[in-house]
Image (cartoon, rainbow, N blue to C red; front, side, top):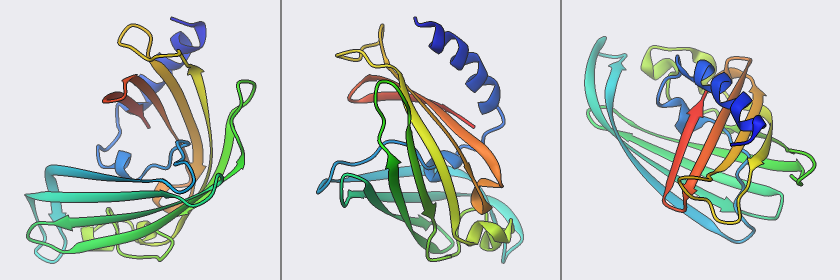
Length: 192
């Protein structure tokens, strides 16, 4: 295991402990789609959710769909749709622009925005939370491969670090993720 990984892993474990699980669905990353390609993700979540109108906490099923599209080699657009049982449906538009592409010598620099339409969103007023979460949120982040084996495996995973800062939904704080890709089907994430 490399020295960089040994230094990064404990830091991210410590930072990730207080993370709310749904944050990972909204955290920008430095992983970009290739131009002209799309990826559709479906995520099913069961979790406690405060329903603001009724003022009660109950468990609801949530279906979360994310469509990622590479528009150019520097621009990616995402559409997120969230359907909550016994509540409402929500959708947002996100955009990511790569200012500096990653090389083996330096990380990428990506700027963008989430919830560009200013829709009601997770943790916002419909959920009895912070009204800033319903506003567009802008960010800057960098991403870098700390270890990039020719073929990731359980013994030698691809290790990718993401670190950024954002406003509103990101609480004017640093956020980050350590990604460990063991094979095309299995990835672990530690995030803050």
